[in-house]
Image 1: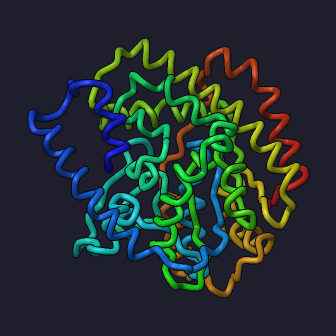
Image 2 (image 1 turned 30 degrees about the vertical axis):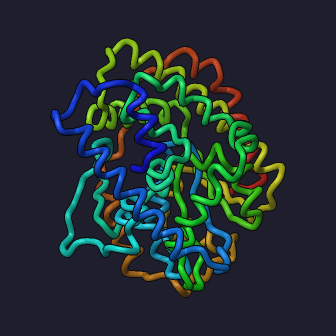
Amino acid sequence: MGRAALNWVLEGGKPQRGSSGLLLAYRWHRFWFDRNLQVLDSQCRSAVPLHPPVFIVGPWRSGTTFLHELFAANQALLAPTTWQCMNSSMHLLNPPPDGQEVVVRPMDGFVITNESPQEDEFALLAQGIPSVYLAFFDPRRLTELTRWLEPRAWTELPQETWWPRWRTFLTSVQGQRDVRLLLKSPNHTFRMQAILGQLPESSFVWILRDPRHIFLSNIKMWKAMIRRYALWSVDEATLSRELDSFLTTALELASRVLLDATARLPRTQLVVVRYEELLDHPSEMVEKISDRLALPMQRIDAAALQQVIARGAVLQKSRYDDCSPPNAIESILPSLLQSHAAAYATHGVAA
């Protein structure tokens, strides 16, 4: 990560976890990250237009990764890869290494390689654009990061502090190719209004899932990521309490964004799908979403699409029917479900 992101992390003091040479390694990588970023800026400082992207949005753990991989089989779309997102300042300087190193996500078993479609959120984070994923490194400051769930925080943030840097990365991925970028980050959900201010012709696909299941799956995901990457420890009771508050706020604000988006955007620019229908009828849903957004079906690699569907079919699908979310979720559940129903009624696509 670069200077701005690492400075935020190191404001927390000396890490409690990691080797004695960890800080030296971070600072060394920061130096080269920033140097490489200067080269990237010079290579991408051109008048090449950025085509309107297609965004996969919705809260974390709502099925965005599966849909991202399904649509990445369409060669009219271009998804940033894991190598590009995790090496956002040097991916044009160094190609990915030979061989297919495989990593399994700790929360759900999805397999990741250098060439897998990846969240551009990791590029944003590394380049110093505010991201709630910084809590993976310092979970003690999760409450501090909650402000970036508020859409107004993004519309009020001076655009020169985030948009040029993000645009440079997007341009570096798109290059001169006549394709639309396929971008997936649940965090973009909260940036939608700010994104539309810069890319007004963007298209969005929003996935609806039972908020109780989203909440419980997120508890699993956030704790798994924190166990793997946190540089500081936080006691379980405090982490659980703050995660409950953070996720409740996220679901409530996402619901407001969804209603605002359905009021602002036409059906040809925003598609709302249900998680269960996506899992049960992936091919049909890809076809119907593509038709709504005028994406060329003839550019879909049928073999690649079937590989994604096959991988999705064998994944263990977590069930949370016997688990009880906290009272805070139950109290806002009727409002969340009402928002889902209203959005689906006007912008939904059924299998």
